[in-house]
Length: 179
Image (cartoon, rainbow, N blue to C red; front, side):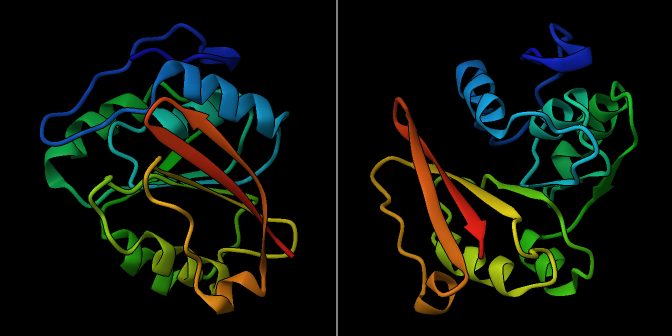
């Protein structure tokens, strides 16, 4: 995999062992193009895997950046990959759900990329929306299989506005904004 933009553009990152579904180059370019300038914006990468999304954000000026990954098989590769970053990427090795429950600091952008078979993505999105992770204007991006329609719980619909959905083959990235 290669980083598609910013100061690290073209750098190659390792793919960890275990089950992984790395975000396609085309998707990352499109998503980060839609986000625009990230200089000084805070960024959280949930279900980080290889760390490619966190690296893309840091490469484009996001700071601070955090990566959350539970799978211990991916730990060494994630640490090795984020060492390429021009800014420190804080890595947290725990379940995304636990991270959200413990969160105290808001982020400007949260990218949530759970494994496609994960059945609780919309409940997790509601938890993120209700947590201190989001403040007015924060954006939540959810990468999901195309066949999984957004089904946000009512309490999340009260605080999240759906901005757009971008389709990339068999996957979709939904953009939400905290209102």
